[in-house]
Length: 303
Ligand SMILES: Cc1cc2nc3c(=O)[nH]c(=O)nc-3n(C[C@H](O)[C@H](O)[C@H](O)COP(=O)(O)OP(=O)(O)OC[C@H]3O[C@@H](n4cnc5c(N)ncnc54)[C@H](O)[C@@H]3O)c2cc1C
Image 1 (spheres, rainbow, N blue to C red):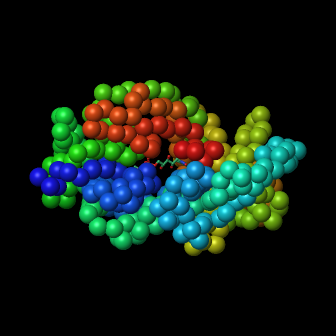
Image 2: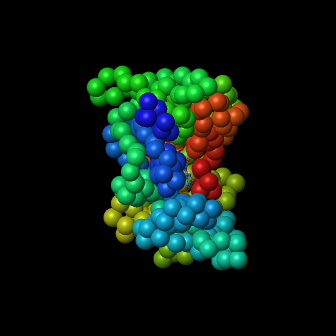
Image 3: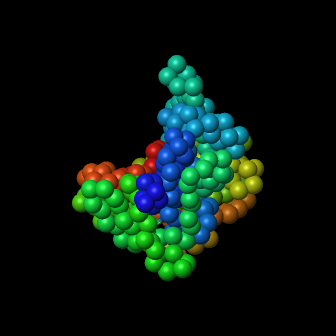
């Protein structure tokens, strides 16, 4: 019966981990159920804004994040043809926040750092290869059926927080809609070690153009030596293979920034962009957080 008194969290993405760390900090027992075996390091979120840094400062992790990320104090709005339009100085926020900058740090590193920090706390379990399949609740308890390496298992808790991403399984068992739309064009992210800083770019750049906008970010990368992500829109009529074609990618990079050598490309990624929000974030003892509750264009680093 004691075990029923804990909080269940579905999904160990950055939001599930953040929820877990908050519960640990306040001494509330929890079980974190994650379907995947490991923390995936595919290129996704790379930007952390001041309010999130303030939250993690309360949990004593912001300095660790700073140690592994890039502190970016300005960003550029640019026109693809005419160049720099505006250079935003985030230092003007210094009276409003102790962290007047964006921190560039990949989300899998955020998850890894929190995972490590949780080792300092007791009364919790992090169970990987545990995929939430079904959810039931009454006035007192939430009952979750979980697929595990040893077969289906039942977990009980006082509350369940669904942090299981945009396709949330938890949400399907709640009395909520997930209204909104999906943009017809997908976004292409090309990752290259080419050093755009030496040709005048900031670590964060939003580049306008009536034909092909672009966004450019520098993140630490796996070896923390720095890597650039270039984001382009794509033609909805093209297949993934056509979009990923080497010549196509080289042409797009050359079109954006002509270079005498070809661009080294270390990763390419294509993702759908949605704008959807749950009609309610809570149904009885079940709550939604993160992408399970709301998904939007991540370009501003506010996914
Ligand atoms: C290219 C790209 C760039 C982005 N850049 C930014 C950015 O700079 N800043 C920003 O804030 N956001 C950004 N985003 C958005 C950001 O990645 C998401 O908002 C973020 O990952 C949401 O975190 P989450 O923990 O809610 O969900 P997720 O990261 O999707 O994590 C969900 C977790 O739940 C697990 N799971 C799923 N189903 C189950 C189940 N049934 N049972 C158990 N576990 C389950 C998954 O394996 C996963 O580990 C970007 C996204 C993309 C694609």
